[in-house]
Image (cartoon, rainbow, N blue to C red; front, side):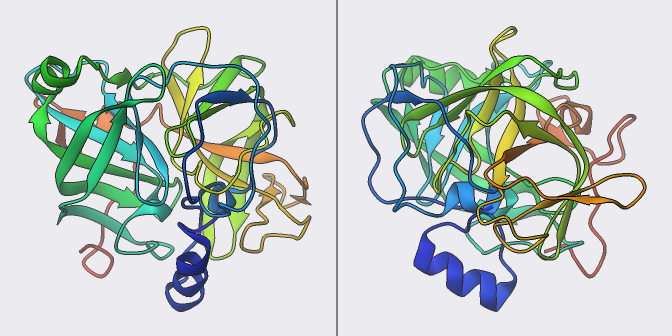
Length: 304
């Protein structure tokens, strides 16, 4: 999982144990690519790599960050009058990668996002007022609360949010990894799941493994992974094993229940998101104590 922006990432990764990917340099014209994904950390950072182009696809509801990709999302029960949410990776957080075990909630933010339309053009600019939740523990996700409601956003831009699925991804299902940063779509299938995925100091649970066609690159970190059967967000793109190393930065390894380590060079991964809706109640309010919510909770030491 590449840090955001190569140079910045390196500094962050070394100095702050920052992990996964960030962004690339200039965004390309919308197209579809079939290829692998660099590690979660990689997916965000290595702007120097360019994916293969295929065909145009819909980018409506995706966003481009300064260093990563993301999406305007809603929970299955979200209402039009609820404040909008933008989802990206935990390692795409503007304040740097959260350390292992760290959970950040309700942190002030003024970050801006470029909202895309179906063809990859700019539909408008979204602004956050806080980081609702961010972590790289068990999963790799940041959720921002926006200054406008879904209805206000749709009225001004014509863009509706993507819906987070509340069910676990299905092995064999076709998926699209849609990068708002690069304006590219990577198409492949869910190959299977990693019981534990380890990269540097971070460990993620039950990660989605891509088939080899999704060759994602730096800047794709935080991209929504769309189940093409349902059209809903099934996961969030976050890393790839780039060099065939074992459990190092940009080289995640799989660890099964018996502790056996498996290395899959060139294979990309995503973090499941189906558990997130249970942690949001009426009004898109985060409630980590809600029934069924399994997201890691902050401690007095880790919370900001």
